[in-house]
Length: 182
Image (cartoon, rainbow, N blue to C red; front, side):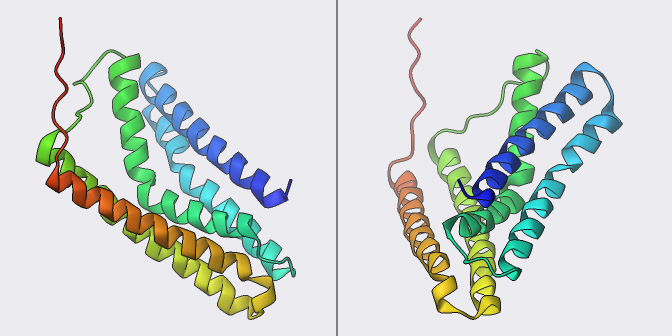
């Protein structure tokens, strides 16, 4: 398996490990500074992936799908990272520490609006990610070495259009609150 694939897997696992270490340090060990340190490591993980991928490409590697996925991963992590940490923090505090309010799950138009905000974040990560991919194509300046970049851009374009359609349908048919039977 390609080194970049393993690096992406490592970065994803490391992302969640440092978040978990940050939350355990913050809430269980009552070490807020240590918790903040671990949570602050999340952008460092992205930086490691960015530098390693860039060095690999600048040393003459053909830009393959894993390189493109690394760009996607970095842009999604940059845009969604803070909200993913907040999501984990809210659930850790409520389900593990048994404190604070139950994490909010919007329904109806509140869900539609929440999904629309998430779609806008997806659009921003798309713009950043495809920008990185286009920059790679420009810098390498060899179409035979960057074909995979175009493939990932096309697939991501289809995905973001489908996500927009889903977003619009939530405004037409907003999700209703599930009935509970006691």
